[in-house]
Length: 166
Image (cartoon, rainbow, N blue to C red; front, side, top):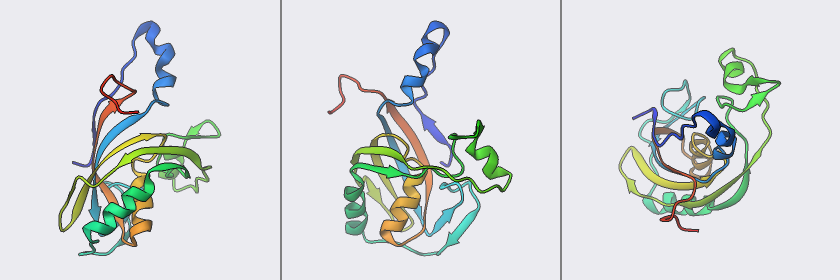
């Protein structure tokens, strides 16, 4: 899976007035990361910017890097994002080959833990407020010293529910 799947909030009629607030809500994702390649988009559909076939990391190191992500920190969005720069979506500028300077934004990661690991990839559930998604490959890859790309992403929840943990 390379395309994002899962929960997509849809607002109709008068409810469209709250759509902007939904983007700020906490979200849950299940992400899968491929070892050995980093791309310009952060996922496997992008153009490779670094390749190291056969690269891998021990399970303990992955679990440790994920635990270090939990908390609040600033994160620079990827050039291929929906962030607006001068009224234009960043991804539009990036696709034209333009340099896209983006300011860091606050991100809160409430949970990031190793779900599964194999010889060429690993899976992680995340609970976040803010960006993280494809940028997680860049940030985790830097922590682990190995190129990573998101190979699968599923949003499992938007907003708090009665089942959510604080």
